[in-house]
Length: 239
Image (cartoon, rainbow, N blue to C red; front, top):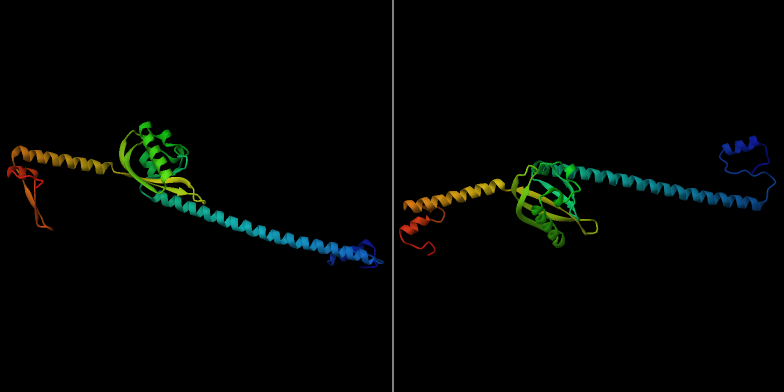
């Protein structure tokens, strides 16, 4: 409040920190009205400052959460890629979401060319039908699944495999997709088949030559006779 009315005096007042300027003579109603107005403006400024601080805090927390999510995703990708077993994952519609490097090597195709496709897009129909039926069964039952079947890679080579799969859920607990691992058992099955053929030939050779053999099981001390030994002595192997 001042008796000075020149612009220079008003400017000095504002520079000193004043927020308003009233010249004498003045009316008390005007002073009260101006004070109320400035108090209201001050409250609005304080509220705005508080809201800005809260918004800044939310933005910081969101950025931190996004960075943590990115770090977690990068870690999981590195972890999955480090697994030597082929791994894949799909959404609830059966569309592929991703693969690890072992799957790319095993199947003979890059993940960029496979993501977004279904089993019918990348597999022969007779194989795709079984894959789809098994996936559908898992989506309805939940939990995990394991079964033996076959996979044909892009080179046309058929491999015997065991699928190990499990569903994953979203934040609400609803099934969102599945993740699976493929164990190649082709070499093992070939060895088993060769062993079976060898044992069959061995038994046939003993039968033709009328030669049998036996061995002693050391832990139990029980003698183990070949099938031909029973035939030579006229005994029933089942007795």
